[in-house]
Length: 543
Image (tube, rainbow, N blue to C red; front, side, top):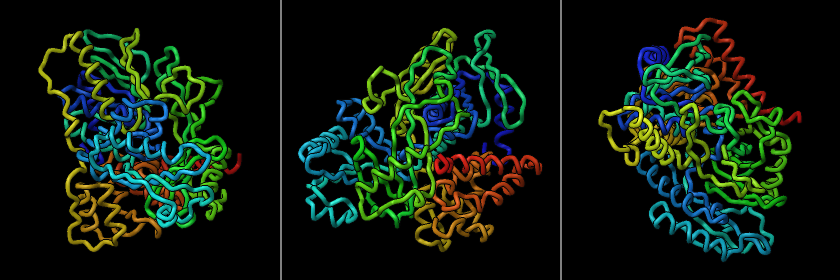
């Protein structure tokens, strides 16, 4: 159910029903698990303490890719799996898996050499079974200058061109949640599950805190799955299994660092680490860093920790970008926004995090919880399939006997898959392209709001293609509960607007108050939370 009352209906179901599976964590992994399990016929509850995709799953480089650099560490199985999942997403979510040309330049005396780069991309294409969007070839220096005239020219030997895909990571997670709900799952945000639980018959009883309403209630489920990502160790209270690393990205004006519509792979002059320079409409995204997380008291990270860019992260990325694109001469004042997240890397005791695998791990503990951690955005579906297979083994042992369907998600389209119908409304080209790519086949629902109220067709930012109808749609149909949910993950002005959405935050808070029946105190609280979140993203300036 969507609409203003979706959350209240979900809460009633959580209290009144018994579930086969309670999934804790509404990021990429948890959302994909809930979708896979629900489409097989399991009774599923999904609980997220914040907003869906509010942590790592909305702070990625926003790529659906095999991980070309993983070939350096001979991680062939992960690359093969990732490329297979990329191919599936191209079929099941074409609006959210958009092919993009990448340029990987080669320089004299630097790794990788043109020959090694060519061999690596050739192997990458082979692991993709030479299926679309494979389209790679080698470029000489003249072709590179034509396609990327701002690239450093000294010692340039040419480049390798290949294709990977970009996505909207938060929306990819959201569409998994929406599809899970469509097939019978109960999904709710702002509900925190306590670690401890008790048994009652064939069910486990979990204590839940409703952070929206401020009260506690209980959820009954046969099996509970910990899918809390980088916070897995804090939630499981077992021996540490993760080595969380911080990844920071910068957002710049595209005119200050033009990409000419292509992603470029560059290396830091400081440590040789690979960094992407990515087109994002009128903006350019630079990222990412990879540094070990050193949180308070050296304990595992928690969701309420301050996870943000530091001045050293910003300086590192600016140095890398300026070395690769000397004409840009980027300064700290050019940074429009930053975003940062923790990767839940499995700790194998390796000396460097760069060599750590992006593989995932699944295990159970003495409390009969099933835990999953690691992995990457691209492999969220296959990882979920494996978790649900494991969960079914446990559920069968616990007496579940009814017939279930096999895994459905390999070919099942996500809600926005299909042809986007823009109707007869006259839209600016950039707005039409943005709405089609963002909502896919659901775009007619957004445009119906504009047809009813033409004022909702106005731009929210003069430089960007987002329109006012998207705010309303986020609240009514896309499960947004707070101003931050709307402006960071549904209509991401917090990332791409020069004001970071502060100039439309009041309007958004008023819409939420009207749609959800908030008091003035509740409206002001949500607005204050958003302003605080923007302030945190800017704190690097004072470091």
